[in-house]
Amino acid sequence: EAGVTQFPSHSVIEKGQTVTLRCDPISGHDNLYWYRRVMGKEIKFLLHFVKESKQDESGMPNNRFLAERTGGTYSTLKVQPAELEDSGVYFCASSSRMGISPLHFGNGTRLTVT
Amino acid sequence: DAKTTQPTSMDCAEGRAANLPCNHSTISGNEYVYWYRQIHSQGPQYIIHGLKNNETNEMASLIITEDRKSSTLILPHATLRDTAVYYCIAALGAGSYQLTFGKGTKLSVIP
Image 1 (spheres, each protein chain N blue to C red):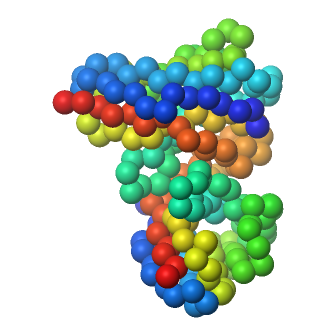
Image 2: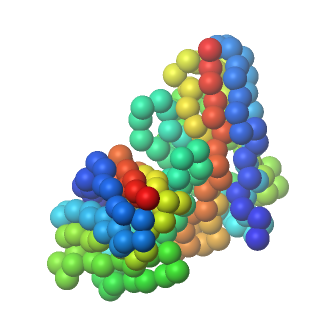
């Protein structure tokens, strides 16, 4: 079984630019989650999809962040415009049954905003 | 979610059992204890979880005290590849997707 795949693994952009991160969950997993660790902080929840619907986006920091999951398969997280404080590692995770099955995480995208 | 407390760091000799403690004195009756770990440059990896009873899988054992206020993750024969940050998380079994990772315990397995 292929794991959760994230692309790119690293991204370096300038302040004010736009970046789009992609996540491919494990096949058949309806639940998809985004987490992030910004510099020196703990890993924090951003949002949760069930298929193509946003179930919970209470962790999204502001409206510069837009997550989509068209068709209920892969997901994208767009940051526009990027700010310096957005630097960190963005993790995607998926699970088959919410609350019962464990979360399977990807290796993350390291975003550096200069 | 209940707050958990873990030691900042621990060392373990290769081949020996690693016992990682976690305190969760305010855990509620319907909260599970989850353990994840993060090996350098990788995403968090699920290890094990439990509610009341002790649990064992191919990776580790989880021992939960009878009052559920603390638990211990046991890696029976630690290898160098087990060097990682280990996170103990108390979360509801239903809807427990907002995991609160905390700072975790940095386990160093020494040759």
